[in-house]
Structures are given as C-alpha cells and as structure tokens.
Length: 290
Image (cartoon, rainbow, N blue to C red; front, side):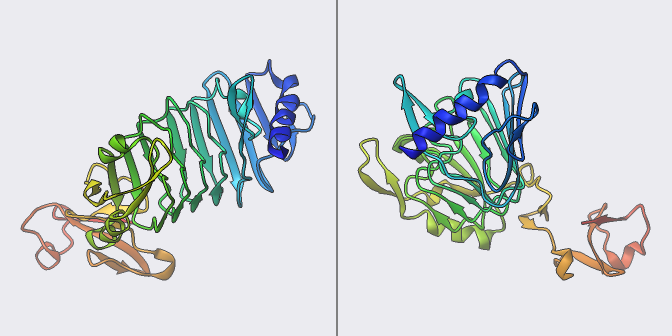
C-alpha cells in the first residue's frame, strides 16, 4: 500500500511539470523550485521527453520500488513511473546499486550503466516488454537480483563481467526457450570466465508458470572477442580480453612495462620485432599508455 501511495504522489508532483520538455529533479526540487521525489539519499533524475531518455545519477544506493496497478495498467512506483510511455532509454551513472523495480514496466530499448554499479536489485528491469536486445553490464557488477530482467522478451545478448558472482533466481528473464538461445558474453580471461560458466551450470529459472526449473547455461557463455573488448577497464592481448593493470597499486601485466612508475603496454608493429631488436625504433615499437 505504501508503494502505491508513493507512486500516486510521484504522479501528483509531476503534474505541474507535464508541459516541460525536460523534467529534472535535483536535490529534491524541480527546476521551478517545487518539491519532487528523489531516488535516493544522493540521487537525481531527469526525463527528456523529446528524446525519451531517463538519466539517473548521483552516488550511493538507489531507492527500492514496487509496481502498482492503476486502471489495469502496471506502473513502477519510482518517481518517473508516470512517464512509462515516454521513456525509451535509461542511463545510470555514479550509483552503487540499481533499486528493485526501478525501471520495471517500462519499454526502453537502450540501457546504459557506468562502472559504479555493483548491484542490480530484484526485478530492476523486469516486464520491459519492448526491451533492449543487448545489455552491457557494469564492469564492477557482482550481484544480479531475482527476476532482474524477467519479461524482456527481446533480450538475447548479455555482456557481463567475470566478477558477477551472485545470479538471482530467474534473473535473466524471458522464457526458457529464449534463455537457452541467449548469448552471454564474459568480459575477462579464460580462467576468470570459467568460474562464471560453473555458476551457470545449475542456473535457477522461473518457468512461465512460476515453477522452478534448473537449466545448464554454461554452454551459452563465450569469451569476449577483440571487437567486444572495448571497455576502458579491459584490453585485448591478442588472445584474451583481460583487465587493465591497476595503476593505483602499480601492478603491471606480463605484456606491460613499468616506465617512471607508470604502467605501459607494449605493442610491436612488426611480427618479428621484439624489445631487443627494436632498440626503441619508433617504426618497430609503440608504447601505449594504459
């Protein structure tokens, strides 16, 4: 009941903003100074009604929400829930977690999150009918909540980090046949991603009738290729997509070299070149700052 009231209040607070092209809620205030419902202790949001983009930014954890029904239509109780028919893209930055049902019952076709997101809570993107066909997870993600992507019937590719250790019941969503065909791209090396494959050997899934089923999705996992190893936190070493060296700890990868306390990756521009024969000739060797 509390969540239903919250949803109605959020709609009430946005009535005065309905004619604006961009609805922005910063520090609990709309642009005109009236009160708005924030999305966390340090969480701001805005909806661009022209482009359909919802932006959520700040720090810390996002609030958790539930869905409510009004006139036989399901809404998220999040403060932007009333714009469900206008939102086509979601971008999250700076937040440590994405709240339960924060983006449920929307119809977005683009989902972006930066590497601050460590946890996606239960049903965060559930029942997103139109949905995105491909979603790239945060490189820092460790937890994917129960039914986080349930009901995303178009979702066929998930790009996930090898750090994803907790995968909730039915987290991948869709129906059993769609899940069996899902392409799960693991960002990481062979050894790291082998652990992800083990976690998906006994994947817990809610069937269409909400009965529990166990699926083996280990064969659905493949290593990221050179074309997918695009994140600033990874690099392609010619065979695997590996994490960049951690400069703060002054760690260097086997293909890297410390120069004046900084870590560089070496790439020889000729196959026969090596560090000894190149003699730092710029035509043979290229130093790439990481």
